[in-house]
Length: 125
Image (cartoon, rainbow, N blue to C red; front, side, top):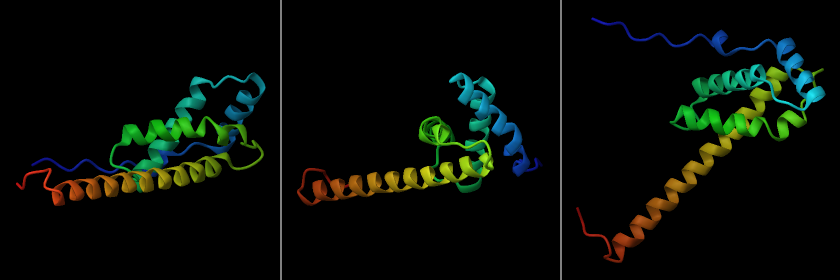
């Protein structure tokens, strides 16, 4: 009998705020996003997905969140603040927008399908 896979520990997705601040400071000085900063943001986005599961697809969520974080939040990041909390908040708010957008698309599609069914354009199953 196999055991279920244990849930990942939350510390697996934690990034020390001082280390994150150093990466952001380096980015602000050079204007280049380092591999370490990219991995840190990807790790953070994965942790947000593990915790909240805003949308079903992890890959889609993490790529969209990292793309979002590399835009305005990274430009507005202040290395004197707790950047882990800042980026996590930004990721959660963006995840909420993704969830709402997906729900709106599902609702729109179901209404479209219902309209087609009422009009007789789709045969009954």
